[in-house]
Length: 156
Image (cartoon, rainbow, N blue to C red; front, side, top):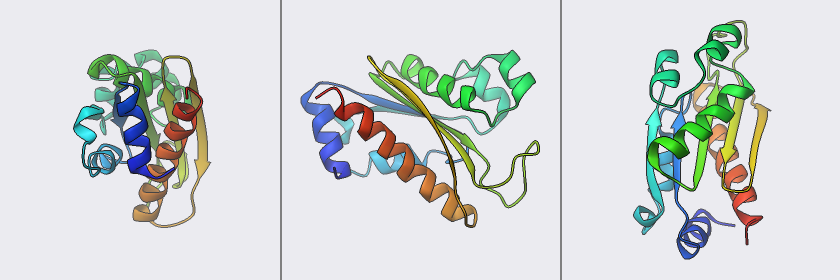
């Protein structure tokens, strides 16, 4: 399904989407809003690059961040939920990971956790991407939209 088809399907079902992005810095929201008519679907997005903002804006549990760090599957899940709540959306997409070039908290570049949360479904995927910073971020966007598409398709 093309991105325009995803936007169209969400629009027909009167569903909306919001993002909480760390390593992608708003790229998922930018790609979603590149589609004409997306304003009926995209509620907004949070760029939570700083660890403290993951808690302050997206509601990620502070103890989780202190114990596991910002790059963790549970953080991605909570970012997705936080995007839904903060923006009043049907679907939330959350991303955290290491784009590189250096490791973060002992986690190598290319590790990305993607969470999608919706009315009847939630899923987190961890992917490992080879490549430079740009390639990691671009592949993370594609993977996040694929996961959203997959879960949204299940509601058809």
